[in-house]
Amino acid sequence: MENLTEIQERTFARATATTKGSYPPEDRLTEDELRAFLRRRAFAVVTSTRPDGRPHAAISSFACAGTTFWLPTAVGTVRERNIAAQPWVSLVITDGDRGEHVSVIAEGPAEMVSAAEVPPEARADAAGQWATRWIRLRTQRLLTYASGRARARLNG
Image 1: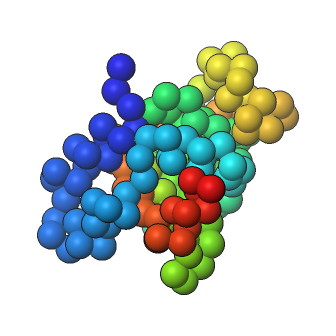
Image 2: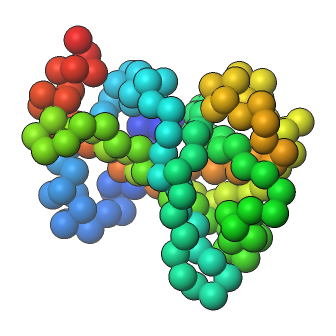
């Protein structure tokens, strides 16, 4: 089974020189660092595309299981309509600020699913017991970055 760092390696193999320069290999998160970071974070900025092409961004809780991100939502939301029209989502999770920050950007195809299709641990991790629908994001692209001081915090 593929893990997130394998997706990250594949992403960087196809990335432009500018992207590779912005995310040097020594500053990318390892699988263990990435899992620890995701366990500590509760919210992400989720972006989708409206049917008319305009972007839409919102804060959401999330859970990650394997290479899939789960985001609670409800029937009739803007995100539900957006995913029906353009089934692709970007998720941005950050912590810290200048010189001491971590960032994770995950992208991939998304679909709306019922709560019954969500692993129970994901429902608990995302605090989504209220959710009537869920977004399942299957990660296809992943970019990560941790500054030196942030990496020390992750591993300390």
